[in-house]
Length: 73
Image (cartoon, helix red, strand yellow):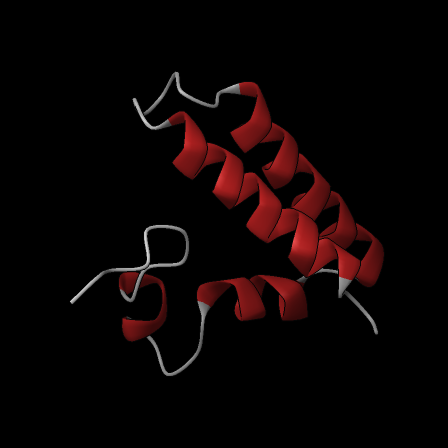
């Protein structure tokens, strides 16, 4: 069984919803867009630094980019 290293199960198992969905509801649309942009930048800028897995960090950045691209569609 493989685990999703980008959006792992523990992101969804603590509550009956994903925490990012709660963050989205707590922020204005503009604030949430800024959160997504900042999170993408964070993972791109420290890719391979915080963890030794450069590709995983870039995939996390892409996850935030995709969430941003699909925001309010």
